[in-house]
Image (cartoon, rainbow, N blue to C red; front, top):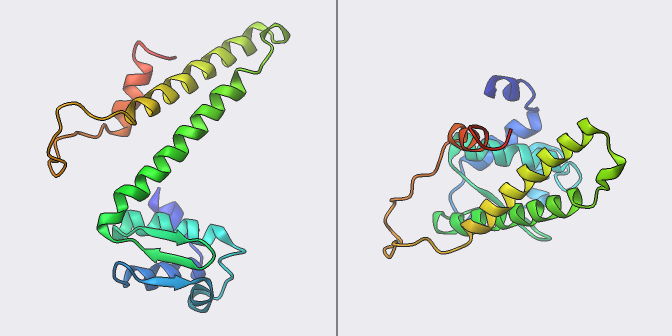
Length: 168
């Protein structure tokens, strides 16, 4: 997959990625500075920054965080958990909205195949929302916040959980 993405990475994205990958944590870049680096208006062409953010995380272990009205900053390690939490909470809100949207459908107006697909989607969205809300609860038995004892399931393990004997 990376090879496909690299083929589609523009010169502007590469220039910005390479520049930011060399910066230290806490360094801020204004929108104007970013335009000078890559030759594109990153406020207008937001996909450039989105691509660079993904590539920085994947290839350089750096998080580029937005500063409203100014530009972006390379996050310090002690800020990454809060940034991740913000994204997770956004995801929870999106799952909640998905459940509310899928619940508005008049089932009597659907044929059997459409009802099956709708019920399937309702179940998947509801499970995702339930898991997201459970994650916000404090974890039992962990008193030392510096201990790294929680195993994060792989994508494959989550898929198996949701498909084997679960939602089909």
